[in-house]
Length: 71
Image (tube, rainbow, N blue to C red; front, top):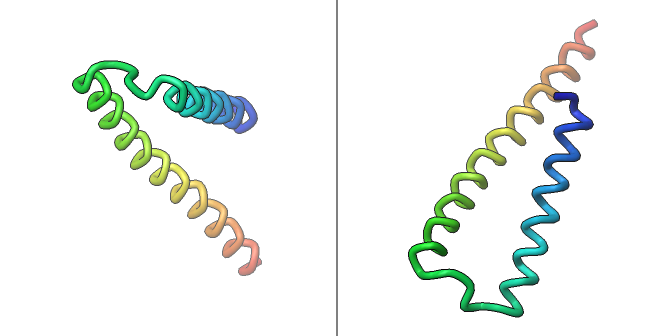
């Protein structure tokens, strides 16, 4: 998957989340408590993974800049 493809997937996920937020404003009683807790756990895991990916990407950029400084 190219960086452009991945960025498009991330944007798609962002749009899905934004849509669900809007849906929840209209229908706050969506799903059972157990269902909602399952989604909360999945989102918490997603946040951790997204943060790790962001940090890894930033590290690669910083290491690339450092290598450029040494040349």
